[in-house]
Length: 407
Image (cartoon, rainbow, N blue to C red):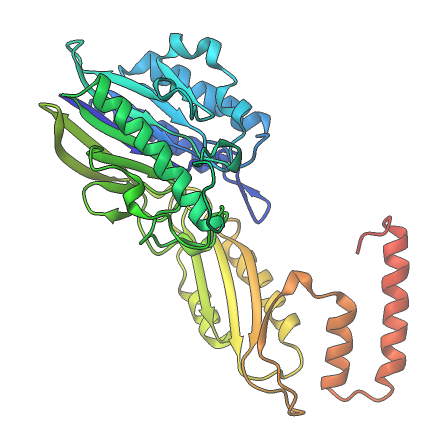
């Protein structure tokens, strides 16, 4: 028997609205080691987007290296890591000289001409080979191997390139490991998948057809989509991102997937929930409704929760921008560091008092002080408002000059 743990999309080093996620990412990695011990995991399959950017920050790299060293020292778990669309080949393959000592397999780039470089036999704790994994990273256009004369649009080219690649890997596994359980890894957008606003669009507007994976693969460990889901139940599965990477991910639980292989076939698939290390809240409503949420809010234990406030009002009354900023400032004073408003927006869905359509959404941070001041004067019908606005603009210009051009 072999136990595999499927995870993906760690995005180490990511920042959300300029705030670092390293604290919760470290807590996840600590939990992951405990999970590998508790579940007696033999192989950890990480299906791409190890880092958030191609050249990750040093603190993210250090956290990753420390995790690998701890996993090798504290557990019997081996790890196979493939690159995602956020990863550079160098960032994934960079520690290959140390990989064998840490029981790590790194596949930062595909090998279209040599399937053996992507296919790895998996042994159980008795040293018997019981499964094989085709560990394929994200395929870029330079990796495509299409038949001569193939015609088709970009989406057809991408789909056909993936189909050829995975069929070549499947043929290799069938030829060299005919009686074993065959597992595939992929970092892509599959058909019937539901994405969130935190994934980067890659290659195609539509999902890749599921038949790019031959039936010989008993399990397909997918990465790229951050919401846990199964394009094909009990066979093709997205583990999802372990930490919340945007406010759009607050509505569903995070998980890893434990896959048990017994007698060279999949015997069990278990979804294991990941603890929430930092709560994100996405509040939408009128000023009155948002104020009620603030009044009733009790900050939870753990890392400081982050909140996004979306005010939706029908009409502009005159001081909404200033009112929102004042509401946020007072809330954070009352919370005394136990919660933080990370993002906010203001939208008017009807018409202004003057009958001008005002529908649309705007981030308060994107509105200049001059615009807020001018709109307030206009709405309140101040006498000589144009002169007052010119005087205010002069003060803003003077302040910008004194602070090196920064507003």
